[in-house]
Length: 235
Image (cartoon, rainbow, N blue to C red; front, side):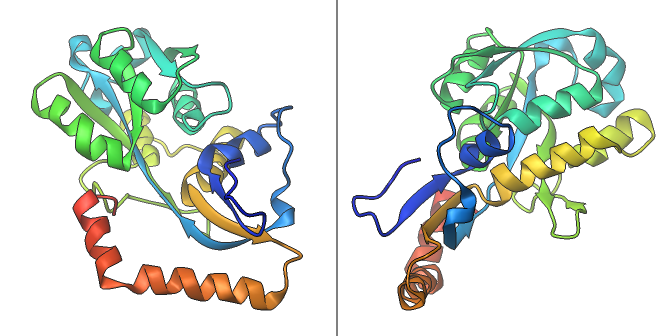
């Protein structure tokens, strides 16, 4: 976990939640010891090289028969929900672990070393859409918004893209269900609904927690902050 310079607060990234729920033996932190004061979500999109002649759910037969490589940071990293989605769909995707970042995964895709890729919202909007517009890639589905009641909604950042459950239903005629689907939802909540957090120790004085809540609320409400977010195409 990336800690701030002082011990009274820290920052958390989405893959830390996936590491924790996946039982990664390297985990040395407990979410129960933290109180979040700010949580920021993100989304993501799975896209494929057009060389396969696949550009949507109607091509599920070819999608299942085509072996593809997927550049991954590691077994429990941020792309874990995408990899589980591949498995639920019955795809033959071989992860190649060892990427230092999702940016490296995107470069592997651009070089033709990986046939399918996933990027979070900001990178998709800034770096993947040009590939799509250039005829080098096609989006398949979005990693979506999982609501508190367990339902899944389309990501408002790309409302024209089907959610993963929608893509599955379009491809197979039935909605995804079962333990794998529930695991996918849990991973989405852990890694994407809480993609970035600012946390303070759970045993911190209540006045300290409230001070941080007030501070982050001031930042979030500031017009300059909202303008910066829109310009960055973050949300």
